[in-house]
Length: 587
Image 1 (tube, rainbow, N blue to C red):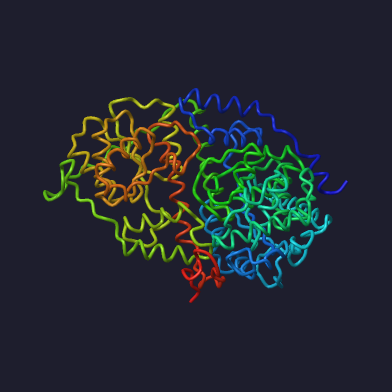
Image 2 (image 1 turned 135 degrees about the vertical axis):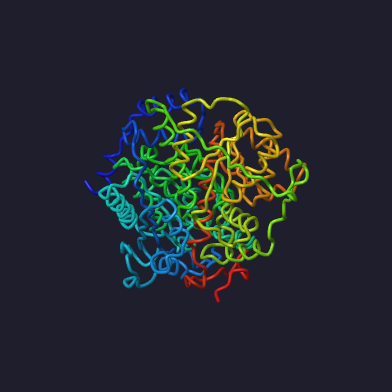
């Protein structure tokens, strides 16, 4: 029995009874419906078999390989970019994967599965090369059946290494120019879909190149006729070494009861391969975010029975989306531990600081001094984002948030550890003990200050206090505890006047904020709406809890802005096609 067969035999279905009891208890005691985040908690608990598992020790594993189909000019970047980026991860340390590893935090592992270059001199590289790239799949199979198995077993070995280290979670990612073409072909083959249904823009290619890419996928499928029921056959004929490695990581992780959080279309297509080989591996998988432009991913996730919890318009499989989902899962573990604790006794929240605004400052509802964001700084921030070593606009909402923060604060790069606060506006209601415990646990874990604004505060006093909090906290969550709309409006205007980015922390607050932004459009520049634009997990949580979770998206954006390097700094080739051509520069 070879390694692959032994691994398949070791994959079992976790006992979900404990997880069901836990999530039912969390919902019943807290009165909060956490949607897909509750499902994520249940899946992790089922995998571990523990009532209160610790937050998972994690590795980000980036598998790299070249593709022969790159000769068909289906990418916006030249083939040498695969090598450039591998060097970036390990030498310049300026890729999105590096920023993600800093943000989680996690160990970053980079493996050469088949880069078409001599990589012996790259420090800390895991050399697992199978061949120097696959063959051109439009002219025959991308690899032999034996090499496909070798790629999968290499991934199984990497998962075993993570298990031996004590990891309980793996965030897989990849780097391989033209591999979205392989992903599209894999999805089309296994799900019996047309090339048009599964082929996306990848690294943001032009319309003309997209049409050509569709035809390349069609040609590869026609030439190779992969068997939809045989995952290894599909991998061999239209896959890539790095995609086979990720499939192996999934299988190995499932055998070791390790959680795998999928990130983007390429890791999801690899999951299709793993699922075709061993369907029960799906119990070790979480879907992090939905892709809006890679058409293969929604089809693949439906086939796997997975529902993403985020929608961030990320088009980069370097664990940017999966890292956010993992951080939210950690908060769910804290929420459950706080709910299940006895006795439930928490420190009271802080009262807001007492400040008197200068006589020139506003105290009336419609006379706040809210400045327009600094357009010059925003343009400079966008220029930096465009020239970070990644496909242009590939980080979606994370890029929008970084630019928005630049305009509000006047700083191109706000520090990754910028202070955050949760301001709870009380309408006189008592916060149930379980919810108090959940909020206390979540905010303590993320070093978020919590201020309680009682209903007795007058408008001017609330305005002065919120302005003071905003001046010290550029990231500000406003949550409602039965507070009325005028109080929310006062808090929103004062926070914007104080120069903070405002996250409406729950559905009730968000509704009031949206209504008031219609009346006062200048406020829209200071607001980051989370529901349903970014968080799609169907959460029904009051008192700012959604904002606490959503703050993870902001922190990820800050790490992207601060930790990534430009094309020049990382010595990576710029785009030669699509939206990035001419806008991305290497000086």
